[in-house]
Amino acid sequence: MSARSQQLGIEGDRDVVLLGVGHTHAHVLREWRARPLPHARLICVSDYDVATYSGMLSGVLAGEYPPDAMAINLRRFCDAVGAQLVIAHVTGLNVLDRQLVFADRPPLGFDVLSIGVGSVPSWQRVDCVDSSQVVQVKPMQTFLARLDGRLRAATVARGTAPLRIVTVGGGAGGVEVTLCLPAYLRAQLGANARFEHTIVCGGPDILPGSARGTVERVTRIYQRRGVEIIRSRLVTRVDGAGITLDDGARMEADVVLWATGAAAPPVLSRMGLPTDAGGFLLTTDTLQSTGSASVFAVGDTGSIDGVPTPKAGVYAVRQGPVLWSNLQRMMSTVPLRRYAPQRTFLRLVNTGDGRAIGEWRGISFEGVWCRRLKDIIDRGFVGRYQYLQVNRDAASAR
Image (cartoon, rainbow, N blue to C red):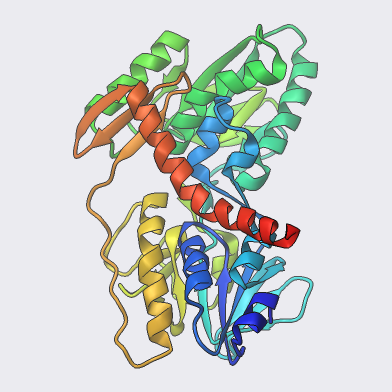
């Protein structure tokens, strides 16, 4: 039991376990601090002791924020909340005994479990012979370190020749990284750094699901910056020299940024729970697994049976209040709350030059004011959790 739980007089009769600390679970942690469930203990399990807010990665690449701005220190956060943090790698789930199974520690029992381990970039139908030049965007906690290492190696190998950079994936993540990377390259390699950038998208154009105006705005920026867009092509092979496309074309590359569509983390296949065709955990509209009422699956991890929903952080954010409400209701006989995915949401794409492109209900717009709006939203979100860290440190100092 944590020190804060002891101070509050909470008995650890029931264990509520959060696997992964993403958008949804961060909300639960914050609410727990204000209103911990009676006779319950909260345990967070994570591979890392830092959670990274993906919405600010583009700003970090563009030099608008320091890397720490998008990071939440989970040790300090959980301590401030009164939750126990377990840093360990989960390998599976024993549904009948209600236990999480780990690679290098005894199983952890739970009364209620919520799984929010996100998604990973897809490697479906890709022959990966050598991925030494590939930098996957996820896990985001280690992205910058891996990118820096690859840039150093590529710079040594290329000498004074321009770096050949390829982004694989034309979704919002790949598009935004491509837009904001030039500033990062110049900061790391020097103001006169030379590079060529290409983005490969599997569909007929970048930003699937976005309004035509948004796609055209991004395309014009790419044209001005010399970024080549390769449309309707899939990568079939990755080797030490570059990539091969499904039409047989070869592309030599020094750095391959892997930002493909969402795939299910391998651990989900070892949970013993029903999954959809993509391997994500099937849930009801209360966010409970269809295979166990004591297990929730949130964010990218879960797929509501019969309700197709894109894998995007905005949905995970909206699930936070629903999960928190249902965790409380699980401790009583009150019916659980249902989650209905929003039909539309504000899209904001950082263009890496102090501006952003926005989209709302099919209408596209851009400008400095859009970037300011994105900054307000992003700082506001991550600040809710970093604030608790600061308060905890201040209290310790006193």
